[in-house]
Image 1: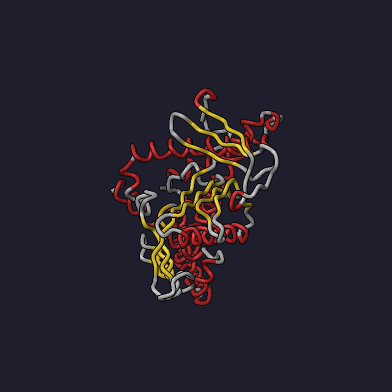
Image 2 (image 1 turned 90 degrees about the vertical axis):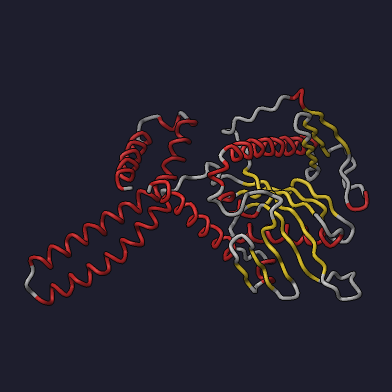
Length: 360
């Protein structure tokens, strides 16, 4: 591990030297790439510097104990030695986590899709609540939410909703949310007081950007324009501003109507199509590397049931890690940190174990 850290430190110094070259900012593509790499390596370099300082402290304390006869100085050295030994264990573990292979999409924004599944109106109502949960969570982190399209029911539910969440590291945090979310509760329309089970599906995709080589042949696309509509078909825009894209090779259909301008809706629709095509490419690569996915949380399959929200008992259970929390109200209001932190920790532990097996 330490040979690798020395190589990283050397490479980091090379990057810093290149960033200080005259006129480097004029080459925007190279400058951006160097800045991104520097930002990725900085936490590793800083932690490694802490490790070296701590190791030096241990060596100094041992030298004092070996050479010093003054009892007071020896006691101080023993105390410093114990503190440094405890600190270096924590630093080494943190370095192991930092050296885990990075998902190249972790720093990207995300596109999320929520679809009502089994349960009719109740599933649509739950889909709307989960959408609001993610909006609150994003706002708590200072991230921006941008609605692309939603198909609403007349009673406040959502059959489907597509939206983006923009913020540093959004995908690294939200990627664990893909899958089937199940709700258990008594619907307001249920006169007999029976608990019903409904489901929704959540898909989390890294937003494709200009660095991703996803080419779209316009001959493969049909573009339809129409008037946007609200609940019950009520007209919300008297111009043909809504855009529907149909991608013939994949059968993907994109609908965008949230902007007043047809040009803006078209741009949103093409951006979402590019993201979906990028997501298909990611899934293809992951299928080829299926062995690597065995070390991840869950299977990554969007048909996998990942979480249950039980309203009568006020509990949320994440089935992938066996975590149950009795704080349903807070979670539905966007307090997802405890759930997501546990998922990240478990994922890191599994990948560290896999890495140890491979190096053994």
